[in-house]
Length: 252
Image (cartoon, rainbow, N blue to C red; front, top):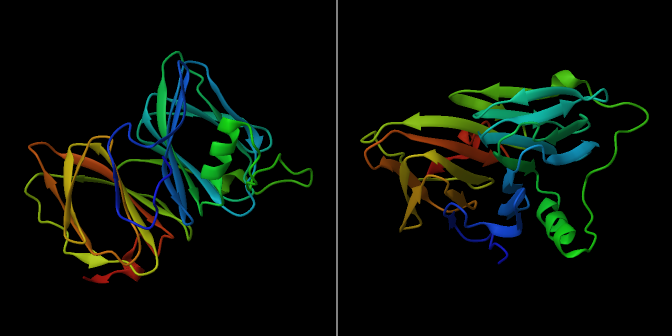
């Protein structure tokens, strides 16, 4: 099942395009849009991820859903183990690597912005064919400074660069719904960390529960509210960012 990026999309937990599923690894594609490729992954204990590498034309981001992810940054591969709720951003030319260095499973989201063919690269790796992708070994002439990377957690903006904006939001049931609006030049996506959100997207109601991915293409009117009886926690993702959508938003 390849995803239709031209239409609004609701994927329930476990409903992404499956790339591989084994005892120590599961990968699902959530988004294959030119502005954003996104995946959900589970790595088993001590599972290696990727050796040190760079991207020249896009940013690579990780958000830890459960467990701990070990990230290596810089040519010296200085490792940091980041817990649940942490976002790591590796901009272009920053050397990075990742793995599960713990004795428990780790579940995480991975964003590539812009997409640059990451989803096709994964599909190719799954069926034995090569697909071009913006990734290479660390350059001999050096990389960008490690301090350009971002490691952040908590409520509020986690990343806001030109290619992508990511915000973690917490909201209570009964909070006012977001007024219906539209973005003309960028994609807006949501990942529900806990609770339940109800979306109205182009007149269609979508119920998004824990683990759901919602993707709204440019030009599609939408609004949402917290439903259910518990606090909702979710990621709000804009690609490109336009300062988390503020500079590209108008009433529907």
